[in-house]
Amino acid sequence: MKKLLILPFVLLLMTAVDSQAQIFNTSLTLTVRDDLGNTIEGATVQLFETEADYLAETNMVIDGVTDKKGVVKFKKLEAKSFYVIARKDDLDNSGGGEQIGQLEEGKFNKATVIIQ
Picture 1 (cartoon, rainbow, N blue to C red):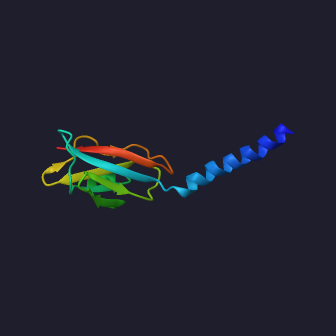
Picture 2 (cartoon, helix red, strand yellow):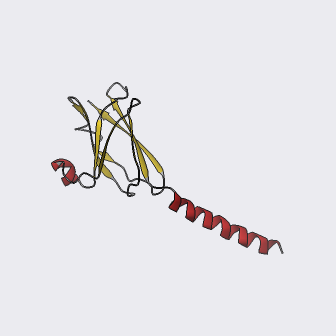
Picture 3 (cartoon, rainbow, N blue to C red):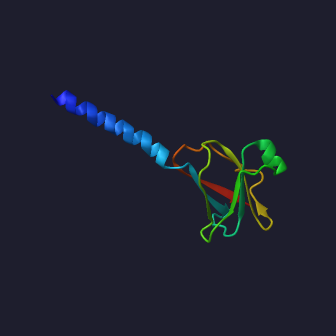
């Protein structure tokens, strides 16, 4: 009798896990900092799918501007790796931190970019 009660519970749990992945979109919260670790307000951030698009600065996937805490949020992204350009005045992230690792699907992903 106990085995019969466990099976429906396991099936219900499996359904809940599958539906959770469908409920949450893949998102990225990106923090922009300077080389001293201070957050940068008003930095423009652009995401690109390919290195060629990144280098040519064409076919941008999405862009945004950091808030007063140096944070910009991107929602409904594909679970993949992106190239990023972050700029504020004469500061940018060229020479390091140019690619965001593979995003986890259905998760709130986080990354930090240093501009100098």
